[in-house]
Amino acid sequence: MTIDTATAHGFYDRLRRLYQERLPFNRLLGLGVTSLNADGATMAFSMREDLIGNVFHHTLHGGVISSVLDAVGGLTASASLVVRAADLSDEKVKAMVARVGTIDLRVDYLRPGRGERFTASGRIMRAGRKVAVVRMEMHNQDAMLVAVGTGTYMVG
Amino acid sequence: MTIDTATAHGFYDRLRRLYQERLPFNRLLGLGVTSLNADGATMAFSMREDLIGNVFHHTLHGGVISSVLDAVGGLTASASLVVRAADLSDEKVKAMVARVGTIDLRVDYLRPGRGERFTASGRIMRAGRKVAVVRMEMHNQDAMLVAVGTGTYMVG
Amino acid sequence: MTIDTATAHGFYDRLRRLYQERLPFNRLLGLGVTSLNADGATMAFSMREDLIGNVFHHTLHGGVISSVLDAVGGLTASASLVVRAADLSDEKVKAMVARVGTIDLRVDYLRPGRGERFTASGRIMRAGRKVAVVRMEMHNQDAMLVAVGTGTYMVG
Amino acid sequence: MTIDTATAHGFYDRLRRLYQERLPFNRLLGLGVTSLNADGATMAFSMREDLIGNVFHHTLHGGVISSVLDAVGGLTASASLVVRAADLSDEKVKAMVARVGTIDLRVDYLRPGRGERFTASGRIMRAGRKVAVVRMEMHNQDAMLVAVGTGTYMVG
Figure 1 (tube, rainbow over the protein chains, first blue to last red):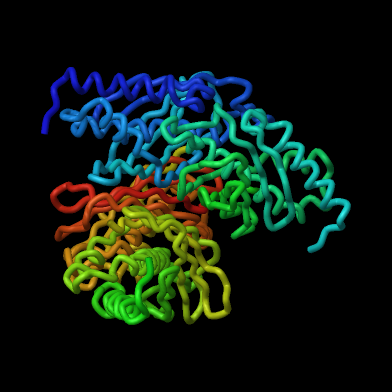
Figure 2: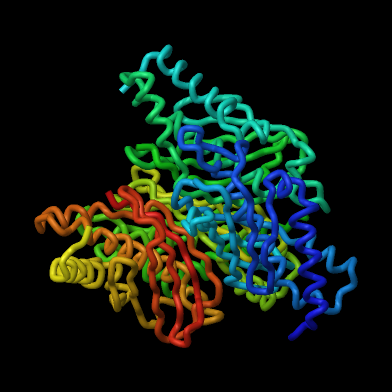
């Protein structure tokens, strides 16, 4: 099944606004959407004093990393629903997106979260009728891999 | 090996201050330590507008849940080191605690994070020389189980 | 919703036979069902030369442990469906059970799998309409905790 | 640090024989090593009646999949130790490899394990002094992605 470009862009715009502007905790983290399509998504944020978890090493809190990986995983799972959005009314698209939720999440902390700017990306591994599986990665501005993760999301 | 009560209490006090007062992101979440001993730890926080992740359902952001489970898991892993703290200088205790880090984390989101006050607890499952494994749970004020998790922590 | 005792027992008997007699890999492992109800399940098996994974330490292969935890998790998830089985024909019960599948699994290897007889148990943490979450544990005959795990299962 | 080619090959040969010939449960699964270097490893096995887990759909048991992913993850983690093997005696290499053990494992079952021949590969994500993290994938003979996983291994 295909979907026309305008509908797809409208759907992505809606998701972008939701994840970037309307989710209070994403705003607290300063999280912005930097790319979005049916196969994946990218989000980015900047280091700030209050995101620190290890005062000895001045690195990101593990919870910031897991929050961002979960956010980009959820956005990736939501974006994979684009093909279903084609024939839906605005209300139904909203209801469909509202139902997306994380079932479970694994995060692997590979290296200390040191840097000024971090980018997280998600790639869809399974786009099922009810469940989506996404693999995520986070790099700093020097392309150093900070963390990877895997999330399972309810999508139907 | 045993440790005298005063030393143990001094160690727990140090951890409590570290996790509650000195970690910026824990402060941002409003996270407080409510109990602490060699087998486990408990932390609590209150609902706030900016911790919301699902504006449709007015529930906690998944990242807040994973952050808090990771924090209480790390605190539990750190507290399990109490027996090593007996003969150490202040400097060495500090260095030992600074080395504690999350290797990986799994979070299972069981029910929507709805409530006013949330309590998270950790229980040590493996207290190895190098690695500790902790199982965590989060309940709301009505004892509803919101999420469970498992974390692996570097401790040596 | 309740279910009469005879129907429940018929359902459990069917599951027991399926998991114990009809699944070839469970037979290869020598896995037997030792208890079963709506909240959980227990399975047991004996050490054998060909289940060894570490020849230096003569301990269970990690894959045997993950296999058994997955099996008892799937059995627990299936048993939680007992309330749905009440009004179903034999064919529909069979179709319902055939749809149960593992979405994802985490296993924590806490201590070397040393022993003669191992028991694994599952406890349901979330019994949703589409997805069930189960926490599992494996002990040896001396009640030593060998491994814990968490599984997410498709149930509808 | 570098290692000369002959020493590296001797080390890989030793690992290959260990994982393929000397681990009873790997032999039970019919698991063979098909490639091996410092960044990753590949193993393969063939479908057999007694590896079936779902008799309704005639697909691999989830435990076979988790066993194979764990095996290839452990082999990948072991192979990453090649640089440490340079100056070690045979006895010390053996002791080093014997210490490698799975700390925890996550498996995501993406599609039913249907096929005749399956290949699993591991790629090292973190090669730490004490802990290695590996991401794994399993495909069938038609390059269909059956499962992915992530494992954390003790390596020192």
